[in-house]
Structures are given as C-alpha cells and as structure tokens.
Image 1: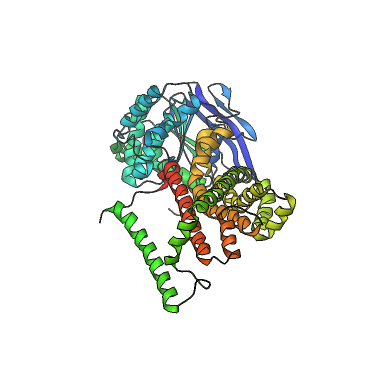
Image 2: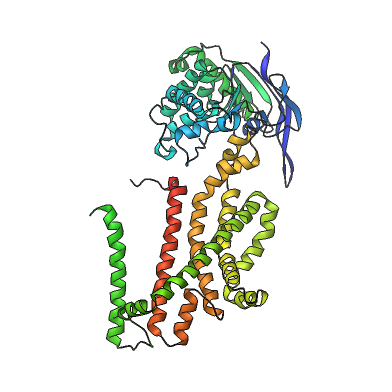
Length: 262
Length: 255
C-alpha cells in the first residue's frame, strides 16, 4: 500500500556549545493511511525530535518528511498532538479545552457545532458529564482522555503522540489503550505513537519501529499481525509474547548490550 | 460560625483590638497629643475636616490608580519584551534592577526640577515609576517559563505568535500578574503620597498630613495616617476582587 506518512533518510543535529549533537541519522518510516505506527527505542534517542519534525515545528537538516505526498516544511492544520503532560489549560473547562484547536483551525465554525463535536468525543472516551468541570477536578487519566479528545477534535489526518500514557499507573494505562483502540475504530486517522512501553506498542500498533540509540536510525520494523479489535488478553497469547521477546532483543541491540548476559 | 460572617467579624475584631491597645498605651503613658494622638482624638479631627478628607482622598486615589494603570501597561509591555527575547532580557534586567534599587525619595527633587509645577503629572509619574517593576518581572518570568508543550499545541496547528500569547501565555501568566499587582498597588500608593508629602503646595492626603504637621495639629496627622491605611486596604482588596474575576481558576478548592 502507498504510504501516507513517509520519512526518508532524515538527519538532524542540535547545535550545542560543544558543536553539533546529532540525534537522528538516517531515520526511515513508512506509515500507510489509517495505520498506527508505534516507535520504540532507548531513552534519549531522539524520539521527541521526531514529533517536532512530523508536526512541522522543525525541519530536518537532511532528508524529508512527506505527508500525503507533500513535504512538511511548516505547521499544518491537519495534525494532532498529545504529550505525556496532558497540557490542560486550567482557566478553561474540559469542553473548552477540547474545543481549542477548532478555534485555530475552524474559526468560523458555529459554537454549537464545536460543542457538539467536543461532546461527542468526550462521551466516546467516557467523560460524559465532566464537560464543565475544571481540569484540576479530574484525575490524571481523565485529563489524558480529555487531551486525546483535543488532539483529534479537528479531525487531523495524522496524530502524533509522545509517550501520552507514560505518567499513568498500569491499570489506567491499559484503560487508555482500549480507549485509543475504540477512538481509532470510530475516527480514521494515521497515528505515530512514541513510547517506551513494548506492550503498549504491540497492543496499539499496526507496525512497531525500533530505533537505534542516539544518533537514531531505523533498526527494525515489526508488522503486528493481530486483529484490529484486539483486547488486552491478546498480549498474553503466544503470538504477542513472541513479538514482545523479539522487540526486547531488538531494544537490547539498540542499547548496545547485545553481548551481555540476559 | 457562618463562614461569611467570620470573614467580616474576625478582621473587624482585630481592628477594634488594635485601636483599643493603641488607646491604652497612650492613656497609660499619659502622652500628650504632640507625642502621640490616641484613637479617641480622631473622630473630632474627621468631623472638623471631613470635606478636606474627601477632596484630598480623591486626589490621592485617582493619581494612584492612574499611575498604576500606566505601570500595568508599561510593565506588561516590558515583561513581554523580556519574556519573548533572550537578548532583551539580558539587556534590560540589570537596568531595571538598578533602577528599582534607587530609593524613590531621591527622584522627587529630580522630577520636581524636570517638570516644574506639574504637580499632578509628577505624582502620577512617581506612582508609575515605583510600581512597574514587579509587574514587568512577573510577566517576563511567566512568559519565559512557559512549558514548550503549551506553545506547541497551538504552534503545531499554524497559530501565530500573537494567538499563542493571547490564548495561552497571557491567561497562564495571570496568577503571577495579580500577585505582582498586589505588591504594585501598595507601592503606587506609597509613591503618590511620597510626592504629596515632600513637594510644596501639594494636594492629596499626603499634603493634608504635611499641613497637620505645619500647624501642629497632631490629631489631624494621625487621622490622615488612618485614612491612608483605609484607602490602601480598599485599593488592595479592589485588586483581590479583580483577581477573583480574572484568575479565580488558579485557586484550588480547599479539601
């Protein structure tokens, strides 16, 4: 299938006092339309740089980020972003937080229409009845749910998530994986998820991309051959366990610890 | 006790207690008025000069508020410049700190010579000069410490710098801004009175204090001090009320 997001040979280095610090060196990524790509790698390997490149907040030194046949050179209205920090605006209610991107992307959309769209998403993630609460009145998991709604409220064609579930406890995290799965079933979008949780990458991903340590390049791509409507139980089945082992080995290689006892 | 009633009764009791202790100290020591007037001397002074208190109080009030408004505008602008530009921050900070360190009383003769006879102008200018610093610093720090994610959720959609400022940076800075405004309002009030007291032929409560001193009317001097305190409290709580309206969200519910 033709890929929707195409990252080709991307090199990027940050300028520091001690000269350039290369973070990406030959990163390749191909995500077909509507697919979910999970990116894993050792910590500090430049995964967050990837989010800034795909969102157009930054341009690579070399190589290209191509979205829907067009090279990404500046921010576009059709991108959604979610971070580990839910980034809730405390002075706005939950529904007003979710509406925020529409104020930028569709300033002429009638208020009622915006609210209807936000309410639809909030009820999908189980936040019906919390629309007019302040973010500080919600738990961390609920804030992250609201943050996901905000990331896709304007129907982006690509959603970029940078460890969105990283700060949550395990049970809440698994709840949110299922929420994410349900959102994808309801709303088509291409997704890049940056994570350090291998179970998460296998549960949510259609493909898992393993990056090398810094400077990062693509080391391994795993096709996750599991049904789209998978449940958490799938993770305990032999097929998934095998994938997790394989990914674990790849991470070990990425960390440069291949020869170590394990 | 009812919580709202408590909010009124407790501070009122504290004020009455304060006045009682003051009265007691003066009575016990047998101080005459020219050493220290007692609260029981004050009603007479208010009754005698109430018209002056109103006209002079108004003078002090509008000059303070005008000076503070200018300080808000200029302080916010300076804060924005420092918050958005590293170079501006490095360049302006030492200048501002140095300026803030100058005792403002030393500026009274400077201003008086620069703008001879412009009493209103000088007073407002001093209220402004003494009070813009905390506002500039708080806005500057608020903007420069904005977490990148907050900027990115809008920047990634192609929002302009101004939109990011208006929708995110500005409201996010409001709690710090009001914290600074509470300091600034008191400073502006001090600045106004400083000029009113020191400059000749002045108006305002400061000038009324000065005339009490010149005429040996000691109860009047103390009456002015109390009036100043009362006006200061009113101004302060006006800022608190504004804070409740515009930054009430920052106050977490008590558990």
